[in-house]
Amino acid sequence: MARPRQFDEKTVLAAVRDQFWTAGYAATSLEDLLRVTGLGKGSLYAAFGDKRRLYLRVLGDYVEATHGALRAVLADAPRAVDGLRRYLTAPAADPTGAGALRGCFLANSASEMAAADADVLAASRGAFEERAGILAEAVARAQREGDFSADADPLHAARAIVAAQQGIVFMGRTGIDVAELRAVAETLADQVLSATPARQP
Amino acid sequence: MARPRQFDEKTVLAAVRDQFWTAGYAATSLEDLLRVTGLGKGSLYAAFGDKRRLYLRVLGDYVEATHGALRAVLADAPRAVDGLRRYLTAPAADPTGAGALRGCFLANSASEMAAADADVLAASRGAFEERAGILAEAVARAQREGDFSADADPLHAARAIVAAQQGIVFMGRTGIDVAELRAVAETLADQVLSATPARQP
DNA sequence: CCAGTTCTTGACTGCGCGGTCCACGACGAC
DNA sequence: GTCGTCGTGGACCGCGCAGTCAAGAACTGG
Image 1 (cartoon, rainbow over the protein chains, first blue to last red):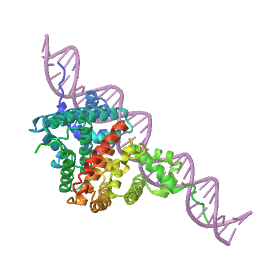
Image 2 (cartoon, chains in turn yellow, purple, blue, green; image 1 turned 180 degrees about the vertical axis):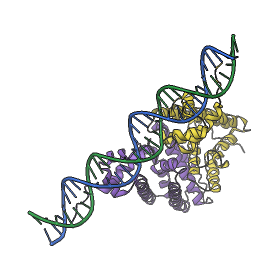
Image 3 (tube, chains in turn green, brown, purple, blue; image 1 turned 135 degrees about the horizontal axis):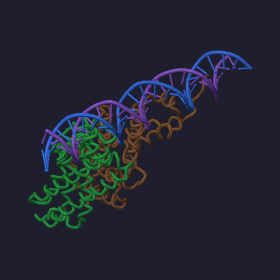
Image 4 (cartoon, rainbow over the protein chains, first blue to last red; image 1 turned 90 degrees about the vertical axis):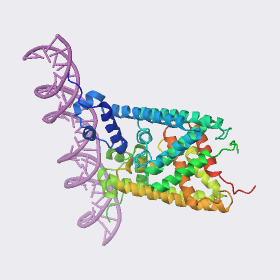
């Protein structure tokens, strides 16, 4: 019994995420959210709570999804170092993805909210540490495969990779030409990954 | 004749800049600006125009100041490569500077506004290209001094350095531990700068 | 067909925002 | 001292915001 929902939760959350992603938290009004979702105020509030809770929700979903995708990319790579390279150059390869003007949702959140919102700061810090942890496993595998300098600490190296990737994403946000962005990404990837004295000839 | 101003313009602009820097544009209310400057609405508006013009003003001043400082650091370095390294590791070295939670004002602006405000996008893009240009000169000098791989294009290398530095700044914004941030900065600086096959032994 | 339950719609509220305006007062020229 | 000028401070305005709520619509089990 009772009336069923007339919207698909995933679709709504995706629309909300895209809105926050593109415009940021403060610059997104409730009316924006109603417009992109097509819902009324009551429905949105009943289903997801207020604006901030909705934001934290889609942010969490985003982190989960991207880390799942990252794990898949790293697992699918024939050699771990290929996966790492793909992670580094992805923002430049896909002009509709994280390298585009809107950047990475998680990074944008950290940038906009971290200084003022302890919850977002904690979430983003945790997410980036988790990401570094995922990458560290790939670094360790690359070391075993002889593609990464064996004396490096995997976690430290992974954090540097995260930083480098975020730098590339950021350059994309400044509206840099795609070809230039690609060159930057390739250059950085070479530098970050090819410090490989242990590679056997 | 007539009443002179009772405030120091530079002091006011610095306070405004710090407010925007810490909280961002959207999250800074006019009342915040009055509080940090101590001015009344009338004075602020008469002297600097509305909120957005004030923002663009302090952003421009910031870019000018930081690029001046960057030129000085690069010129003072005994070897160009030392200056480049200092640029890369600066965000991690100074916990009150760009590496702290508030990050780099220019980068924050690009992050928050670029997608929605064409003027800010153009300004930030231009500023980063200018920054890359400044660094490219140092790269070229480093090449002449035998400290940087001679076959690299200075401008491309400089853009990669900018990206790497912004990545480090960004990691600082996530609230990462200072020691870890320093490690990331050192690692990245080594990787970005020590691809120096041309160095004479 | 009815009863019960949940979802939906949109009017409503109070607040805080950016921005305007004007009366007051401090100051310099003379 | 007087007058003209311009900086100053705060009252004021309309708007758009986030969030609430009540009445009605849609659906299901019986």
